[in-house]
Image (cartoon, rainbow, N blue to C red; front, side, top):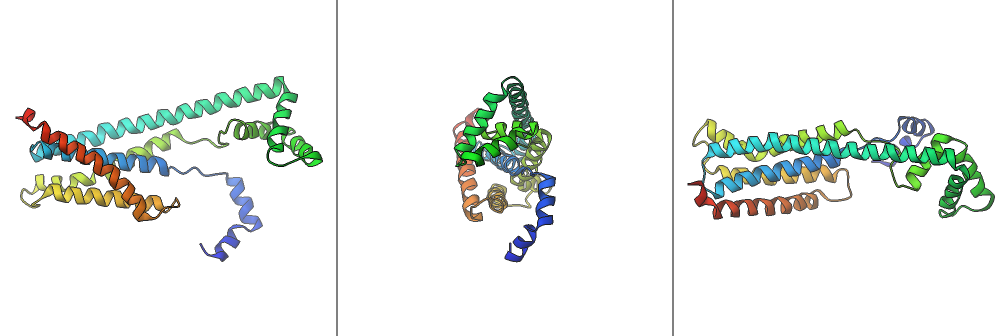
Amino acid sequence: MSREDLITEHSVDAIEKRLQEGPRHSYLRDFVYGAIDGTVTTFAVVAGVVGADLKTGIILVLGVANLLADGFSMAVSNYLGTRAEQQQHFRARMIEEKHIEDIPEGEREEVRQIFAGKGFSGDQLEHVVDVITSDRQLWVETMMKEELGLPWHEVSALRAGVATMIAFVSVGTLPLIAYGIEAAFPGAIGEPFLVSAVMTVLAFVLVGAAKSRFVLASWWRSGLETLVVGGVAAALAYAAGVLLAGLAD
């Protein structure tokens, strides 16, 4: 972003508009979580079945079943986990509101000590305490953030779950494309496992590159990190398939 853009974003009107809209939660973690796990588990299925020397149709059946069942399971788990965090947030807010109602002086002292720890002192400290405790909502939110370490804004559990599901299914489909083409047009792809492996590597690189746009990490480092994790999972699945190949006879 250029200096001119930064200056524009920090004008009085732009700052006022941004603060009125409130903070925006990023669902990048949910997307990356779903995309990586979808790719890893799907390619692990492919590697395991190939290691056991089974038919292409079995790869597609197990791969699609994994995408739908495991993707939905992850989405629901993420949804329920986020809901649990929301309920914890709500309970903590109720407790703080009750404490402010029952023992306001004790809560004022907590605010005083919190901001004293930040370097405020004397009349300046007392002014900060008076301003915060004069607004019940601000008082509660300050205690939530400063004392309990909880965010002021809440996350949408539904959006978190949907982001995980979409990423899991869309990116996790890549390792299966070669086998889908091979099933529809036998012989069209000479080495579908090799193509699947290349598509998996591409998926990891794309996810890493996408993540690098929002974090302080290079695209190749993020891609390499996910590639190593996925490679280990695939190698374990392939080894298991080879060792247990006899059971499939």
